[in-house]
Image 1 (tube, rainbow, N blue to C red):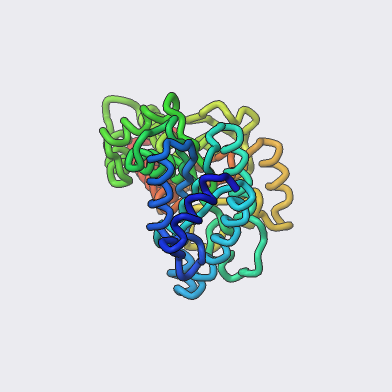
Image 2 (cartoon, one colour; image 1 turned 60 degrees about the vertical axis):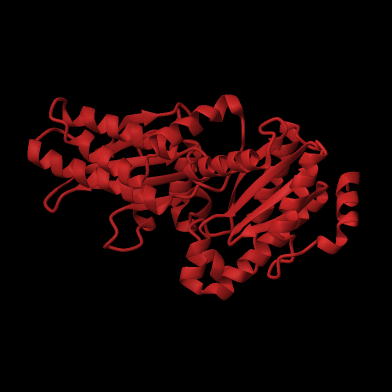
Amino acid sequence: MDINVIKYFKENNDKISYDTLTSVLSRKTMVDYIDYLIENNTKFTVFFIDIDDFKSINDTLGHSAGDKALITCSERMKMIFDDNNGVVGRYGGDEFFAVVENEIEYEKIWEIASQLNKIIRMPNNLSDIDKALPAGKFTITSGIARFPIDAKTKDKLFEICDKALYIGKQKGKNCFIIYNQSLHSNIFKDREIKKIDVKGVIDYIFTTLTDKSKSLNENLVEAITFVSKYFDVSLASKNYNNKFEILYSNGTLNKAKYVDEKEYLDLKTSEVDSMIFMYINKLSPRCDNLKKIFEEQSIHASILIPCQTKTKNYGYLRIDAKHERIWTKEEKMVFQIIANLYAMLLELTNEKF
């Protein structure tokens, strides 16, 4: 362990406190340690770590199960940071933060973050909790910043970590974002200026799709492009009658093509739910053919949404992601709204799908 870590905790042994549930360091101890490193101009990296979809555990199974999840995840975090001369603490609720002293090289930080996400996803004996999670296993999202490269004060460092974490959540969770000024500073600026929430996205959809100055399908492309960028999906398309029409692409899924909607049927959870979504790593043996199809197309997650009214099904919108991600409630809702409104307007205008 680095000399400053030993020195700090030895000199301040009487001030060190721990989180009573998880036994990792307390928030106050972590903040004091970060203050100490900044005062001594010691380079370090800080990780803000959030357990994905933790609320679904508490809501479905109760707080006792939530406590087990926190303990399990914190133990795994501690293993990684102990192995990398770092320390981890609980920030509050389902949020943790960690510090790796004297390490700011991008490649090394990427390696640590990758190890962290991998160990969190490992199988465990908490099958009931796994079932309550959308991904079927524990996943985390992390926002990462380095001192003094990214910021020279604690408040600014925490602000950057928080925003990087936000970007990770927008990308579909189960990932980490290491702050890079050239990549992320404009994103932060746009976010602060526009402050677009999901309600704003829905308002945009209605305004765009009902614009009578352009054709309905031109409006659909505009709306889908905006929403796809907002949620950081790889590809959005129409999937119908052996046809595959790309509406938006970020250029990462060049092998994507038509998939017969019948391949999705085994994934349908009920007759009430019209939307079908999948994760390639959760497909059951009965879906082996669909799994093979998406492996060939390099797709890890997909949503199929029927564009239908009470009297007619026109076809499907298909949303694909190249990277492993978790579809959020907001994403499902927004794409369902687009499909429903588009179908209704098709019926009114008699335009082709």
